Length: 130
Ligand code: THU
Image (cartoon, rainbow, N blue to C red; front, side, top):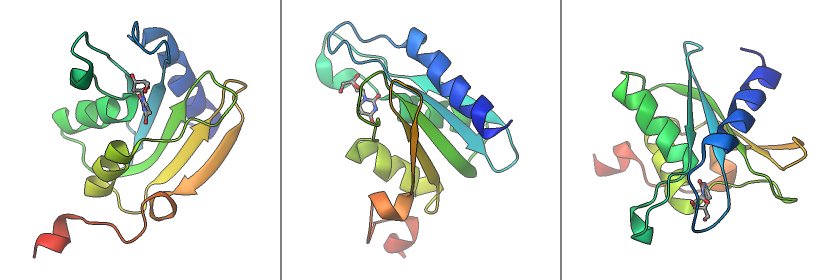
């Protein structure tokens, strides 16, 4: 899948977002090392903390299908600002892909690109437990 296709996959998930409380849809497309792509959207809940972000939804989807090596994640929002991943999502990305490329989109489809170490420096990961 090309970068533009991966971006389109993330943006297409905006329509699947279940966000009746925040009215803030987020879509994500996660590219695995082998090229497989998993998508996700945020899914909120009347008990607010039970909601899940788009990124963790995509990562959980991938892990449940047996994929744990990731190359890139695209995160799409509809706002003016680039949609940055929350802290919990950054930590979940860190578990599987310490050097993940993170592409954040705004509502116009413009991108800004980070690496996970940019977003989560001096991080705690599986090897920290050794
Ligand atoms: N949200 C995400 O899906 N990803 C993020 O990293 C930022 C926040 C969702 C959670 C909630 O459903 C809504 O955006 C507002 O916070």
